[in-house]
Image (tube, rainbow, N blue to C red; front, side, top):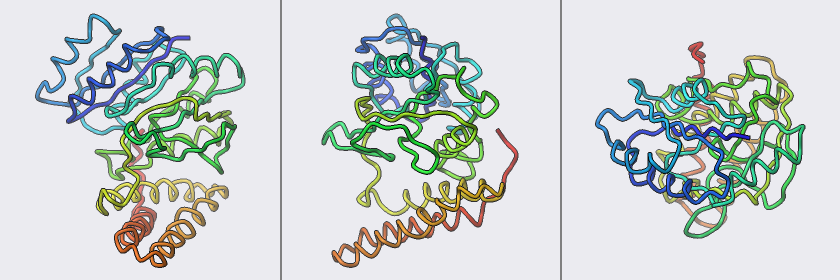
Length: 288
């Protein structure tokens, strides 16, 4: 099975080179890399030239920005049976692609395989929703994040395999694009399996030390995608309204108060504000 890796990038260079080095180390070689380059200054041209002879790279320069839009553009170019969306600041363990293909081969009903995100320095889980246990999951217990998800295109409801351009970096709602697509695909009947044995390294950005502005920005996207499905009268989304918009942030704020950690208290307060702000602000632009 050929794997198509769609890398949308803007503003980063050495991180892209690190990801390409991790691809050179892969022990499964049947893959293509499609780089959707949103830079206007040739920022990664030299990197593409350096790695081009060793990797199957399709370097596509575009005149627009937006992570979801760029990844969607890449879907139309992908030739592989499996499609994935690595971040431009992540790296793959050497056996990632081998293990992904093995899971799809072992479980013919699977449409989505999800790995875990680890912090390269601490080796602990980093961004996204992770678990120590491998398991199937549904839309009521979604796992992973968009750069840890791999999609067997022929096993999906193809009309649902797209990213909503309203979500993600560079869009109206700067987050939630991966969760929105995953929820939609699971709702359409896709079978998904998570395993922490597929190790993808990404800096830990899910903590209060990075500041409140980032949490406010990304949580707005979460609130907006919840509102999108609420508008569709999807009653399952009530679970996320209760969990993401009420229970989780309030409980974490309470724990921060009990521990005397003012920074954590502010962080989860802004999470709560952002989610509700996105929920009430959401208006679809009709862009796919």
